[in-house]
Figure 1 (cartoon, protein in one colour):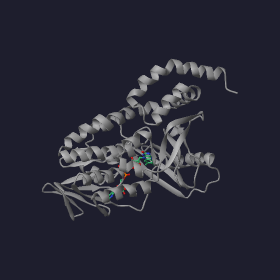
Figure 2: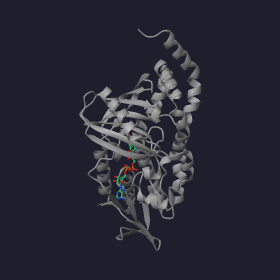
Figure 3: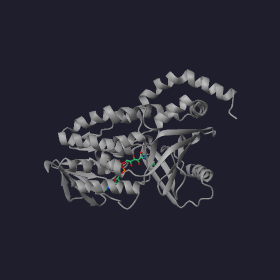
Amino acid sequence: MKTIGPVGIIGGGPAGAELARRLAEARIECVLFEAKPDRAKPCGGGLTPRAMDLMAPDVRKIAQGKSIFQIISRSPLDRAFSLSLYEPITVVSRKEFDDQLRRLAAEAGAKIIYRRVRSIERRNGVFLIDDQEKFPLLAGAGGFNCSVARTLSGPLSSLDLAAAVGYYLAGNYPPRIEIKFAAELAGYLWFFPGPSQASAGFQGPAHGFSMHHAEMTLKKFIERIVPGQVLTRRYAWAAPSLRPETFDTRPVAGDRWLLVGDAAGLCDPITGEGIAHALRSAELAARAIQNGDLKGYRADLEKDVLRELRRAAAMKAEFFKPWFLQLGHLVMSGSEIARDLCRRLAEGRISYHDLKPDSYRILPRALIQVLGSLLLPRG
Ligand SMILES: Cc1cc2nc3c(=O)[nH]c(=O)nc-3n(C[C@H](O)[C@H](O)[C@H](O)COP(=O)(O)OP(=O)(O)OC[C@H]3O[C@@H](n4cnc5c(N)ncnc54)[C@H](O)[C@@H]3O)c2cc1C
Protein backbone atom coordinates (compact mmCIF):
# COMPACT_ATOMS: atom_id res chain seq x y z
CA MET A 1 0.00 0.00 0.00
CA LYS A 2 1.12 3.58 -0.68
CA THR A 3 1.97 5.73 2.32
CA ILE A 4 -0.66 8.46 1.66
CA GLY A 5 -3.21 6.78 3.93
CA PRO A 6 -4.79 5.51 5.86
CA VAL A 7 -7.76 7.45 4.55
CA GLY A 8 -10.82 7.42 6.80
CA ILE A 9 -14.10 7.38 4.85
CA ILE A 10 -17.24 8.11 6.84
CA GLY A 11 -20.31 6.66 5.11
CA GLY A 12 -20.61 3.51 3.01
CA GLY A 13 -23.26 4.50 0.45
CA PRO A 14 -22.42 4.73 -3.28
CA ALA A 15 -20.00 7.66 -2.80
CA GLY A 16 -18.05 6.21 0.15
CA ALA A 17 -18.01 2.61 -1.09
CA GLU A 18 -16.87 3.64 -4.56
CA LEU A 19 -14.15 5.88 -3.12
CA ALA A 20 -12.95 3.00 -0.93
CA ARG A 21 -12.90 0.61 -3.91
CA ARG A 22 -10.94 3.03 -6.07
CA LEU A 23 -8.41 3.88 -3.33
CA ALA A 24 -7.89 0.21 -2.46
CA GLU A 25 -7.38 -0.60 -6.15
CA ALA A 26 -4.75 2.15 -6.26
CA ARG A 27 -3.09 0.46 -3.24
CA ILE A 28 -3.95 3.29 -0.87
CA GLU A 29 -4.89 2.07 2.59
CA CYS A 30 -8.41 3.10 3.59
CA VAL A 31 -11.03 2.37 6.23
CA LEU A 32 -14.73 2.71 5.43
CA PHE A 33 -17.25 3.29 8.24
CA GLU A 34 -20.89 2.41 7.65
CA ALA A 35 -23.59 2.87 10.29
CA LYS A 36 -26.58 1.02 8.84
CA PRO A 37 -25.66 -1.82 6.49
CA ASP A 38 -29.01 -3.56 7.09
CA ARG A 39 -31.14 -0.63 5.96
CA ALA A 40 -31.90 0.48 2.43
CA LYS A 41 -31.34 4.18 1.81
CA PRO A 42 -34.70 5.81 0.95
CA CYS A 43 -34.37 6.24 -2.81
CA GLY A 44 -36.10 5.68 -6.15
CA GLY A 45 -33.06 3.65 -7.25
CA GLY A 46 -33.30 5.03 -10.80
CA LEU A 47 -30.11 4.98 -12.88
CA THR A 48 -30.19 6.88 -16.16
CA PRO A 49 -28.33 5.56 -19.22
CA ARG A 50 -25.78 8.33 -18.67
CA ALA A 51 -25.33 7.20 -15.07
CA MET A 52 -24.70 3.63 -16.30
CA ASP A 53 -22.11 4.90 -18.81
CA LEU A 54 -20.23 6.75 -16.08
CA MET A 55 -19.83 3.60 -13.99
CA ALA A 56 -16.66 1.55 -13.85
CA PRO A 57 -17.22 -1.84 -15.58
CA ASP A 58 -17.29 -3.76 -12.24
CA VAL A 59 -19.92 -1.39 -10.87
CA ARG A 60 -22.05 -1.57 -14.03
CA LYS A 61 -22.14 -5.36 -13.65
CA ILE A 62 -23.73 -5.11 -10.20
CA ALA A 63 -26.24 -2.40 -11.23
CA GLN A 64 -28.86 -5.04 -12.08
CA GLY A 65 -32.48 -3.99 -11.92
CA LYS A 66 -35.66 -3.44 -13.82
CA SER A 67 -35.30 -1.80 -17.24
CA ILE A 68 -37.85 0.92 -17.84
CA PHE A 69 -38.53 2.28 -21.33
CA GLN A 70 -41.64 4.35 -20.62
CA ILE A 71 -42.25 7.46 -18.52
CA ILE A 72 -45.65 9.07 -18.06
CA SER A 73 -45.56 12.65 -16.86
CA ARG A 74 -48.55 14.69 -15.64
CA SER A 75 -48.83 18.42 -15.11
CA PRO A 76 -50.45 19.86 -11.97
CA LEU A 77 -53.70 20.13 -13.99
CA ASP A 78 -53.33 16.56 -15.20
CA ARG A 79 -52.27 17.09 -18.79
CA ALA A 80 -50.20 14.00 -19.55
CA PHE A 81 -47.67 12.83 -22.07
CA SER A 82 -45.86 9.55 -22.50
CA LEU A 83 -42.15 9.29 -23.29
CA SER A 84 -40.71 6.24 -24.99
CA LEU A 85 -37.04 5.93 -24.16
CA TYR A 86 -34.45 4.52 -26.57
CA GLU A 87 -32.21 3.52 -23.67
CA PRO A 88 -33.74 2.30 -20.41
CA ILE A 89 -33.67 3.76 -16.94
CA THR A 90 -32.54 0.92 -14.68
CA VAL A 91 -34.28 0.78 -11.30
CA VAL A 92 -32.13 -1.04 -8.75
CA SER A 93 -32.72 -2.16 -5.18
CA ARG A 94 -30.66 0.27 -3.11
CA LYS A 95 -30.06 -2.33 -0.43
CA GLU A 96 -28.52 -4.74 -2.95
CA PHE A 97 -26.66 -2.06 -4.89
CA ASP A 98 -25.01 -0.59 -1.78
CA ASP A 99 -24.20 -4.07 -0.39
CA GLN A 100 -22.52 -5.02 -3.66
CA LEU A 101 -20.56 -1.77 -3.83
CA ARG A 102 -19.19 -2.41 -0.33
CA ARG A 103 -18.40 -6.02 -1.30
CA LEU A 104 -16.36 -4.75 -4.28
CA ALA A 105 -14.53 -2.31 -1.98
CA ALA A 106 -13.72 -5.07 0.50
CA GLU A 107 -12.53 -7.40 -2.27
CA ALA A 108 -10.23 -4.64 -3.54
CA GLY A 109 -8.64 -4.46 -0.07
CA ALA A 110 -10.57 -1.73 1.78
CA LYS A 111 -11.20 -2.32 5.47
CA ILE A 112 -14.87 -1.89 6.42
CA ILE A 113 -16.05 -1.15 9.94
CA TYR A 114 -19.78 -1.35 10.56
CA ARG A 115 -20.26 1.35 13.18
CA ARG A 116 -21.79 4.82 13.41
CA VAL A 117 -19.03 7.40 13.75
CA ARG A 118 -19.98 9.64 16.67
CA SER A 119 -17.10 12.07 17.00
CA ILE A 120 -14.51 13.65 14.76
CA GLU A 121 -11.69 15.67 16.24
CA ARG A 122 -8.55 17.11 14.79
CA ARG A 123 -5.47 16.72 16.98
CA ASN A 124 -1.95 17.59 15.89
CA GLY A 125 -2.99 17.58 12.25
CA VAL A 126 -4.54 14.12 12.47
CA PHE A 127 -8.25 13.23 12.50
CA LEU A 128 -9.30 11.22 15.52
CA ILE A 129 -12.49 9.20 15.05
CA ASP A 130 -14.49 8.27 18.17
CA ASP A 131 -11.30 8.66 20.22
CA GLN A 132 -10.06 5.45 18.58
CA GLU A 133 -8.85 5.48 14.98
CA LYS A 134 -6.41 8.07 13.59
CA PHE A 135 -6.37 9.23 9.98
CA PRO A 136 -4.13 11.79 8.29
CA LEU A 137 -6.82 12.22 5.60
CA LEU A 138 -10.61 12.16 5.94
CA ALA A 139 -13.40 11.79 3.38
CA GLY A 140 -16.99 12.70 4.23
CA ALA A 141 -19.48 10.41 2.47
CA GLY A 142 -22.26 10.34 5.05
CA GLY A 143 -25.06 11.74 2.90
CA PHE A 144 -26.96 15.03 3.22
CA ASN A 145 -26.37 15.25 6.98
CA CYS A 146 -22.78 14.00 6.93
CA SER A 147 -20.92 14.65 10.18
CA VAL A 148 -17.64 15.39 8.38
CA ALA A 149 -19.41 17.95 6.18
CA ARG A 150 -21.16 19.55 9.15
CA THR A 151 -17.90 19.77 11.11
CA LEU A 152 -15.56 20.91 8.33
CA SER A 153 -17.74 22.61 5.74
CA GLY A 154 -20.73 23.72 7.79
CA PRO A 155 -24.33 22.49 7.96
CA LEU A 156 -26.73 22.92 5.04
CA SER A 157 -29.55 25.42 5.50
CA SER A 158 -33.13 24.19 4.98
CA LEU A 159 -33.10 26.41 1.87
CA ASP A 160 -30.52 24.01 0.42
CA LEU A 161 -32.46 20.83 1.15
CA ALA A 162 -35.37 18.94 -0.36
CA ALA A 163 -37.65 16.86 1.84
CA ALA A 164 -39.12 13.57 0.72
CA VAL A 165 -41.80 11.23 1.97
CA GLY A 166 -42.58 7.89 0.38
CA TYR A 167 -43.70 4.29 0.56
CA TYR A 168 -42.26 1.01 -0.67
CA LEU A 169 -44.84 -1.24 -2.28
CA ALA A 170 -43.95 -4.93 -2.52
CA GLY A 171 -44.64 -6.56 -5.87
CA ASN A 172 -43.74 -6.62 -9.52
CA TYR A 173 -45.37 -3.65 -11.27
CA PRO A 174 -45.54 -2.84 -15.01
CA PRO A 175 -42.26 -1.33 -16.25
CA ARG A 176 -43.44 2.27 -16.37
CA ILE A 177 -42.26 5.29 -14.38
CA GLU A 178 -44.99 7.76 -13.45
CA ILE A 179 -44.30 11.38 -12.51
CA LYS A 180 -46.76 14.04 -11.44
CA PHE A 181 -45.90 17.64 -10.68
CA ALA A 182 -47.59 19.22 -7.69
CA ALA A 183 -47.48 22.97 -8.23
CA GLU A 184 -48.78 23.99 -4.82
CA LEU A 185 -45.94 22.01 -3.21
CA ALA A 186 -43.28 23.07 -5.75
CA GLY A 187 -42.20 19.49 -6.19
CA TYR A 188 -43.14 16.23 -7.83
CA LEU A 189 -44.52 12.78 -7.12
CA TRP A 190 -42.96 9.64 -8.53
CA PHE A 191 -43.69 5.95 -8.92
CA PHE A 192 -40.57 3.89 -9.73
CA PRO A 193 -41.15 0.15 -10.17
CA GLY A 194 -38.07 -1.84 -9.18
CA PRO A 195 -37.16 -5.54 -9.37
CA SER A 196 -39.29 -6.70 -6.42
CA GLN A 197 -40.92 -3.53 -5.13
CA ALA A 198 -41.87 -0.04 -6.22
CA SER A 199 -40.86 3.20 -4.56
CA ALA A 200 -43.49 5.94 -4.62
CA GLY A 201 -42.82 9.30 -3.10
CA PHE A 202 -43.04 13.04 -3.08
CA GLN A 203 -40.08 15.42 -3.04
CA GLY A 204 -40.21 19.19 -2.60
CA PRO A 205 -38.32 22.06 -0.93
CA ALA A 206 -37.60 21.35 2.74
CA HIS A 207 -38.22 24.96 3.68
CA GLY A 208 -41.92 25.21 4.56
CA PHE A 209 -42.49 21.50 3.73
CA SER A 210 -45.88 20.28 4.94
CA MET A 211 -45.52 16.59 5.69
CA HIS A 212 -49.27 16.21 6.12
CA HIS A 213 -50.13 17.83 2.79
CA ALA A 214 -47.35 15.94 0.98
CA GLU A 215 -48.52 12.62 2.37
CA MET A 216 -52.19 13.22 1.50
CA THR A 217 -51.20 14.17 -2.08
CA LEU A 218 -48.95 11.12 -2.29
CA LYS A 219 -51.65 8.73 -1.10
CA LYS A 220 -54.06 10.00 -3.79
CA PHE A 221 -51.33 9.59 -6.41
CA ILE A 222 -50.59 6.01 -5.35
CA GLU A 223 -54.30 5.14 -5.21
CA ARG A 224 -54.68 6.24 -8.82
CA ILE A 225 -51.77 4.12 -10.08
CA VAL A 226 -52.25 1.01 -7.93
CA PRO A 227 -55.69 1.17 -6.31
CA GLY A 228 -56.42 -0.53 -3.02
CA GLN A 229 -52.86 -0.77 -1.68
CA VAL A 230 -52.37 -0.92 2.07
CA LEU A 231 -49.46 1.43 2.68
CA THR A 232 -47.23 0.23 5.49
CA ARG A 233 -43.57 0.74 4.60
CA ARG A 234 -43.18 4.49 4.86
CA TYR A 235 -40.00 6.54 4.68
CA ALA A 236 -39.14 10.19 5.13
CA TRP A 237 -35.77 11.61 4.23
CA ALA A 238 -33.98 14.67 2.91
CA ALA A 239 -31.65 15.34 0.02
CA PRO A 240 -29.37 18.21 -0.90
CA SER A 241 -30.97 20.70 -3.26
CA LEU A 242 -28.44 23.49 -3.30
CA ARG A 243 -29.06 27.04 -4.43
CA PRO A 244 -26.64 28.36 -7.10
CA GLU A 245 -24.84 30.53 -4.55
CA THR A 246 -24.30 27.57 -2.23
CA PHE A 247 -22.68 25.63 -5.08
CA ASP A 248 -20.36 28.64 -5.45
CA THR A 249 -19.41 29.10 -1.83
CA ARG A 250 -19.64 25.81 0.07
CA PRO A 251 -16.23 24.12 0.39
CA VAL A 252 -16.03 20.52 -0.82
CA ALA A 253 -12.41 20.06 0.23
CA GLY A 254 -9.90 21.60 2.60
CA ASP A 255 -6.72 20.83 4.45
CA ARG A 256 -6.57 17.00 4.33
CA TRP A 257 -10.31 16.45 3.93
CA LEU A 258 -12.83 16.25 1.15
CA LEU A 259 -16.52 15.49 0.62
CA VAL A 260 -18.15 13.19 -1.92
CA GLY A 261 -21.74 12.51 -3.05
CA ASP A 262 -24.65 14.00 -1.11
CA ALA A 263 -22.22 15.18 1.59
CA ALA A 264 -20.79 17.53 -1.07
CA GLY A 265 -24.33 18.54 -2.11
CA LEU A 266 -24.13 16.72 -5.45
CA CYS A 267 -27.80 16.05 -6.09
CA ASP A 268 -29.68 17.43 -9.08
CA PRO A 269 -31.89 20.24 -7.69
CA ILE A 270 -34.60 19.55 -10.30
CA THR A 271 -34.74 15.76 -10.70
CA GLY A 272 -33.16 14.68 -7.39
CA GLU A 273 -30.76 12.35 -9.24
CA GLY A 274 -27.65 11.77 -7.13
CA ILE A 275 -26.23 8.26 -7.53
CA ALA A 276 -24.31 9.07 -10.71
CA HIS A 277 -22.83 12.20 -9.13
CA ALA A 278 -21.91 10.23 -6.00
CA LEU A 279 -19.98 7.71 -8.11
CA ARG A 280 -18.37 10.36 -10.31
CA SER A 281 -17.26 12.46 -7.32
CA ALA A 282 -15.74 9.32 -5.76
CA GLU A 283 -13.75 8.75 -8.94
CA LEU A 284 -12.48 12.35 -8.97
CA ALA A 285 -11.74 12.27 -5.22
CA ALA A 286 -9.73 9.04 -5.54
CA ARG A 287 -7.69 10.63 -8.31
CA ALA A 288 -7.08 13.79 -6.26
CA ILE A 289 -5.98 11.75 -3.23
CA GLN A 290 -3.65 9.68 -5.38
CA ASN A 291 -2.14 12.84 -6.85
CA GLY A 292 -1.94 14.49 -3.42
CA ASP A 293 -3.89 17.43 -4.86
CA LEU A 294 -7.13 18.04 -2.96
CA LYS A 295 -7.42 21.54 -4.42
CA GLY A 296 -7.52 19.92 -7.84
CA TYR A 297 -10.59 17.98 -6.67
CA ARG A 298 -12.71 21.12 -6.50
CA ALA A 299 -11.49 22.17 -9.95
CA ASP A 300 -12.26 18.73 -11.44
CA LEU A 301 -15.72 18.66 -9.85
CA GLU A 302 -16.37 22.13 -11.20
CA LYS A 303 -15.65 21.15 -14.81
CA ASP A 304 -17.81 18.12 -14.62
CA VAL A 305 -20.55 17.91 -12.00
CA LEU A 306 -20.82 21.32 -10.30
CA ARG A 307 -21.22 23.29 -13.52
CA GLU A 308 -24.22 21.18 -14.52
CA LEU A 309 -25.86 21.11 -11.08
CA ARG A 310 -25.44 24.86 -10.62
CA ARG A 311 -27.23 25.37 -13.93
CA ALA A 312 -30.09 23.12 -12.76
CA ALA A 313 -30.26 25.11 -9.52
CA ALA A 314 -30.55 28.36 -11.50
CA MET A 315 -33.37 26.91 -13.63
CA LYS A 316 -35.29 25.35 -10.76
CA ALA A 317 -37.51 28.28 -9.74
CA GLU A 318 -38.78 28.77 -13.32
CA PHE A 319 -39.11 25.05 -13.93
CA PHE A 320 -41.59 24.49 -11.08
CA LYS A 321 -43.80 27.47 -11.91
CA PRO A 322 -47.34 26.18 -12.61
CA TRP A 323 -47.66 28.00 -15.96
CA PHE A 324 -44.33 26.58 -17.13
CA LEU A 325 -45.28 23.04 -16.18
CA GLN A 326 -48.69 23.37 -17.81
CA LEU A 327 -47.26 24.86 -21.00
CA GLY A 328 -44.47 22.29 -21.04
CA HIS A 329 -46.95 19.40 -20.82
CA LEU A 330 -49.13 20.97 -23.53
CA VAL A 331 -46.11 21.20 -25.84
CA MET A 332 -44.85 17.69 -24.97
CA SER A 333 -48.26 16.11 -25.48
CA GLY A 334 -48.65 17.72 -28.91
CA SER A 335 -45.14 17.71 -30.35
CA GLU A 336 -42.99 14.74 -31.21
CA ILE A 337 -39.86 16.85 -31.64
CA ALA A 338 -40.33 18.35 -28.13
CA ARG A 339 -40.83 14.87 -26.67
CA ASP A 340 -37.60 13.80 -28.34
CA LEU A 341 -35.74 16.60 -26.55
CA CYS A 342 -37.37 15.58 -23.28
CA ARG A 343 -36.43 11.95 -23.91
CA ARG A 344 -32.78 12.91 -24.30
CA LEU A 345 -32.99 14.91 -21.06
CA ALA A 346 -34.53 11.95 -19.20
CA GLU A 347 -31.82 9.64 -20.54
CA GLY A 348 -29.19 12.12 -19.36
CA ARG A 349 -28.03 12.64 -22.96
CA ILE A 350 -28.43 16.41 -22.99
CA SER A 351 -27.00 18.84 -20.47
CA TYR A 352 -28.92 21.66 -18.79
CA HIS A 353 -26.55 24.03 -20.57
CA ASP A 354 -27.69 22.75 -23.98
CA LEU A 355 -31.37 22.62 -23.06
CA LYS A 356 -32.17 26.28 -23.72
CA PRO A 357 -30.42 26.62 -27.11
CA ASP A 358 -31.83 23.25 -28.21
CA SER A 359 -35.34 24.31 -27.12
CA TYR A 360 -35.11 27.53 -29.14
CA ARG A 361 -33.86 25.56 -32.13
CA ILE A 362 -36.84 23.20 -32.18
CA LEU A 363 -39.42 25.79 -31.07
CA PRO A 364 -40.88 26.75 -34.50
CA ARG A 365 -41.39 23.10 -35.54
CA ALA A 366 -42.67 22.16 -32.09
CA LEU A 367 -45.27 24.95 -32.19
CA ILE A 368 -46.49 23.87 -35.62
CA GLN A 369 -46.84 20.31 -34.31
CA VAL A 370 -48.71 21.51 -31.21
CA LEU A 371 -51.10 23.64 -33.29
CA GLY A 372 -51.67 20.67 -35.57
CA SER A 373 -52.47 18.43 -32.62
CA LEU A 374 -54.93 20.98 -31.21
CA LEU A 375 -56.68 21.63 -34.53
CA LEU A 376 -56.66 18.04 -35.73
CA PRO A 377 -57.01 15.87 -32.64
CA ARG A 378 -56.22 12.21 -33.21
CA GLY A 379 -59.02 9.68 -33.65
C1 LIG B 1 -36.46 9.87 -1.64
C2 LIG B 1 -35.24 9.92 -2.52
C3 LIG B 1 -35.28 9.36 -3.79
C4 LIG B 1 -34.14 9.39 -4.61
N1 LIG B 1 -34.18 8.78 -5.83
C5 LIG B 1 -33.07 8.78 -6.61
C6 LIG B 1 -33.05 8.09 -7.86
O1 LIG B 1 -34.05 7.49 -8.28
N2 LIG B 1 -31.90 8.11 -8.60
C7 LIG B 1 -30.78 8.75 -8.16
O2 LIG B 1 -29.78 8.76 -8.87
N3 LIG B 1 -30.76 9.38 -6.97
C8 LIG B 1 -31.86 9.40 -6.19
N4 LIG B 1 -31.83 10.01 -4.96
C9 LIG B 1 -30.57 10.59 -4.50
C10 LIG B 1 -29.62 9.47 -4.04
O3 LIG B 1 -30.31 8.62 -3.14
C11 LIG B 1 -28.39 10.06 -3.36
O4 LIG B 1 -27.88 11.09 -4.17
C12 LIG B 1 -27.29 9.00 -3.15
O5 LIG B 1 -27.74 8.00 -2.28
C13 LIG B 1 -26.05 9.66 -2.60
O6 LIG B 1 -25.11 8.69 -2.22
P1 LIG B 1 -24.11 8.97 -1.03
O7 LIG B 1 -23.23 7.78 -0.92
O8 LIG B 1 -23.51 10.30 -1.19
O9 LIG B 1 -25.02 9.10 0.27
P2 LIG B 1 -25.99 8.03 0.94
O10 LIG B 1 -26.52 7.10 -0.06
O11 LIG B 1 -26.93 8.82 1.76
O12 LIG B 1 -25.03 7.19 1.87
C14 LIG B 1 -24.51 7.71 3.06
C15 LIG B 1 -24.13 6.54 3.95
O13 LIG B 1 -23.41 7.03 5.08
C16 LIG B 1 -23.81 6.33 6.23
N5 LIG B 1 -23.53 7.22 7.37
C17 LIG B 1 -24.06 8.45 7.62
N6 LIG B 1 -23.53 8.97 8.75
C18 LIG B 1 -22.66 8.03 9.22
C19 LIG B 1 -21.79 7.98 10.37
N7 LIG B 1 -21.75 8.97 11.25
N8 LIG B 1 -21.06 6.86 10.56
C20 LIG B 1 -21.10 5.84 9.66
N9 LIG B 1 -21.89 5.83 8.58
C21 LIG B 1 -22.65 6.92 8.35
C22 LIG B 1 -25.32 6.08 6.01
O14 LIG B 1 -25.76 4.97 6.77
C23 LIG B 1 -25.36 5.81 4.50
O15 LIG B 1 -25.22 4.44 4.20
C24 LIG B 1 -32.96 10.01 -4.14
C25 LIG B 1 -32.94 10.59 -2.87
C26 LIG B 1 -34.05 10.55 -2.07
C27 LIG B 1 -34.01 11.16 -0.69
